[in-house]
Length: 213
Image (cartoon, rainbow, N blue to C red):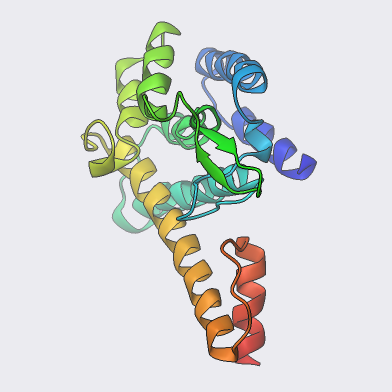
């Protein structure tokens, strides 16, 4: 887990605008302190309750994976379409922050699975995130990246290129991980073996690859 935590902070350092990077760093450190006191540790939390990355550590895995997808999209726009006017800093910070408050909305059941916390049953994580990010003085276009990161499932759809990239990267990684998990469960069913309710992406990939051998 520490490796992913180091990778996370290294990604923060990739934000080029110094003033914006300092604001991102300050916001993250305050948020992590809040999560420690009120919710789950960000680096030990799941990204979802059941659909994808629904295991301890899944949130940071998903966050870093979707960041790489988002940056690949930025590179693709520049290399193949000649479009270089994407705010790369907004894409990086948007990916890192988009699910930041999810740990506030979950709690761990006795059996180790996750359910909504009392807060999570009343408020969604994006609403809380955008409210606090607005108070922290982030620019309007960056607030939109956060608000639109879940597309049609969030407060509003993407209306800027940066918001669209972050949303599509989030969708791609979550859907891909979810499909990998379901494929592995189907392999286990076909073998007549017990099917766990949750598999990590690594466990699921191992099952699928072993089935192909």
